[in-house]
Image 1: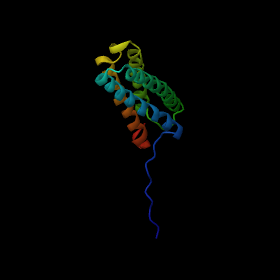
Image 2: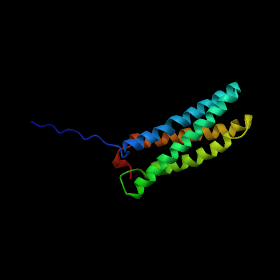
Image 3: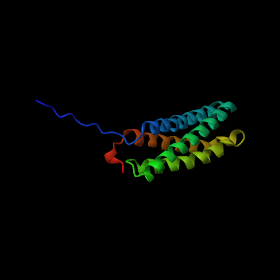
Image 4: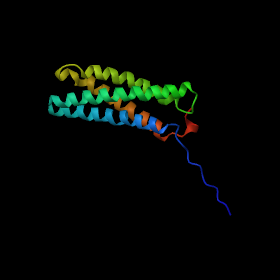
Length: 139
């Protein structure tokens, strides 16, 4: 008697692409946490820490986006949605990095905090799409 083994839905991410995607998923929420801490404590080092986390997030988002665009160009199974979300995340993250390069309170304020929230939500959405959707749902 042979039992059919159910096939697991596999993701379309290459393992190295998944590792690259993990950086923005971790760095942008870390920057948001540093922004909130700065707004509550007024300790300037938290703003500097957030700026470095955002810079790292933008860098790794660019690498992840380049990989996603390459996979799309090669017509490999992947996600157009992942590439679109990463492109928007890169643009918003870059504006956020420029906002955090200002001096003092103006670096975070309401604009910097809003950009950090948007960046965090986009990074989490990219991680959710990249890690959980099976190939059949991504086209």
